[in-house]
Amino acid sequence: MKLFVNSGSPFARKVRIVLREKGLMPRVEECFTVPVDSPDDLVAANPLAQIPALIDDDGVGWTDSAVICHWLDGQGAGARLLPDGEAAWPVRRLEVLAAGILEMTVKMVLENRRPETERSPFWLKRWESNLVRGFAAAEAVCPSPDVFDLGSLTLGLAATYADFRYPHIDWRAVAPKVAALQAQLEKRQSFVDTYPK
Image 1 (cartoon, rainbow, N blue to C red):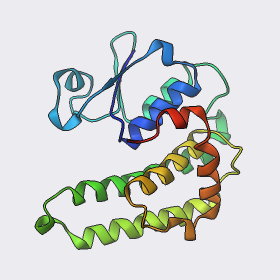
Image 2: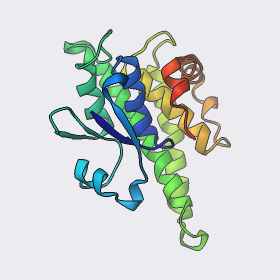
Image 3: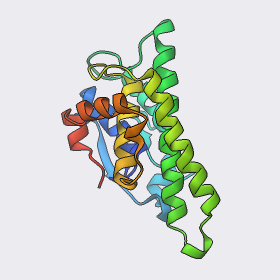
């Protein structure tokens, strides 16, 4: 398998963590790429030139971090990261909320890369408010730090990515349980190995 990533993308980091947790790294080549350059091999894997993108052993392209992670969950060893049946819904709901927090952060990053005269203070303020509200909502459903599934994993890396890009945003004021979960998760080797750069 071949996985297209870069070291700063939180969505790529999610897939990289799952690969390590499921014992799949010996089967995967991580290809570090710059998506904005639209390299041919990335475009062949994902015509939208977005990461993460995975090419499986049969040559099938997989896109979207959640879809890739759900597929990998069934390929590797160890406990399932998304439980079966009704137990999956709370995990999925938290995963989607945490992915939304990530999206707000990424939007802010991209907007701040525009020339200062072209940036929208309105959207930057709105996305920051959404991010903080997202953490407050996650706090209400935050699992204990010993829970490890696709919901907690995504929430933990969303917290780290917010710290990495915007350390001045005090999301911990509304989400101390999320901060405890983040601290526990960042001790896992899969998190250490994939810390954003």
